[in-house]
Amino acid sequence: MTFATLGLIEPLLRALETLGYQTPTPVQAQAIPAVLAGRDLMAAAQTGTGKTAGFAVPLLQLLAMEGPKVTPNSVRALILVPTRELAEQVHESVRQYAEHLPLSTYAVYGGVSINPQMMKLRKGVDLLVATPGRLLDLFRQNALKFNQLQTLVLDEADRMLDLGFSEELANIYRVLPKKRQTLLFSATFSDEIRLLAGQMLNDPLSIEVSPRNVAANTVKQWLYTVDKKRKAELFVHLMRKHKWKQVLVFAKTRNGVDALVEKLQGLGVNADGIHGDKPQATRQRALDRFKASEVQILVATDVAARGLDIEDLPLVVNFDLPIVAEDYIHRIGRTGRAGATGEAISLVCADEVNLLSAIEMLTRQGLNRHLEQDFEPEHRVPDTDASGLVIKKPKKPKKPKAAGGAKRNLGKWVDSGETVADVPVKPVRKVPVFNTGPRKRKP
Ligand code: AMP
Image 1: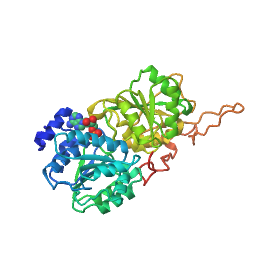
Image 2 (image 1 turned 135 degrees about the vertical axis):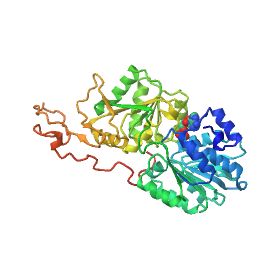
Image 3 (image 1 turned 60 degrees about the vertical axis):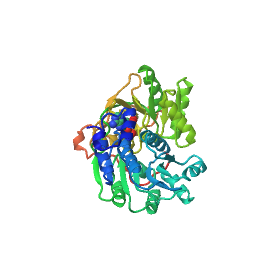
């Protein structure tokens, strides 16, 4: 199959050829004809599957072939994305695909001055990429009208809900024309997403290009068990031992990002960090420098986990496991993209066993465990398996405690006379770690 057989016009074929896209990916093969035929879509597509071209390319064709010229302050197609970085990235792809078409495109997002965006919108744009909050601000300030809107795309819809955008989405939805085409892309489909799809889509075609909730199989994944306080030391050791060249590292908190970057820079390592507290320009600069291989180690919170496309990124390290298991899939999806192979390594301490168990259950696979010599943890990480259970080991006889020794609380253990099967081991995930509703913005 070729792009030409999918019915794309010459200017688009030329742009795809320049980009080196020879064969449509599975999501493109399904989405392109459906979008061209005007269908609504509900697509479950993992990151790295080529989904951006799957919706953007046919959308550009419809804009070029159909509909009136855009009027001042109007938009004809709107792509909603959860983060500023993703807005920039999707817009960059759109710009490349639209290279030979007489269409205007633009991206708007928060964290930067609104005035230049208002100026730019005066003439109207054919295709606008936007984050929900800034889009509403622009609409409320009369910088935007939706009367010409013919297509709406929700990209990374699950992430938008995770980030607490459900109210913004509802407000946007209310002011859009009822007659329009809607394309919804989501890596995972929770009940909440299905509800959203039910409200927004009209007789959608469902596309599922990879098994639900299974991480990219082009990514080799394993973990090191290690004590929490020795994670940074182990990271530096592994980086030197394996001569890691370009690594995207995920840490749980903004402070965690800053602390690791500081430590690495102190050791003379070329490292930078991105998280929600940093100004947008600084975040983008760090990302651009990392993409250009001018920065060796980029440490990020989950703000960087979704959708970012870094060509040939060989390695992702989870310095901390994510609180939401689904974020693991998005993090490791930064590598192994578009068929390339990649590696994802997690540094896991005993405190994180429940998070690990949730990830293994979601991805339906146990992660291989490694021990690095001299970094064997004092606090053992209990065994886990893909059924979501933490398998408890028989209790060891207590050693007499040395005065002032550290207290350990490793949970309830199985008595030495019992087997694991004898003991009613409950799933340990007391708090559901999947999307349970709005969460804080700006991780
Ligand atoms: P996405 O999932 O849209 O973020 O795309 C992942 C990566 O695959 C991007 O770098 C795209 O440029 C690339 N890509 C998308 N479609 C194709 C294709 N048909 N052939 C080769 N590369 C592609």
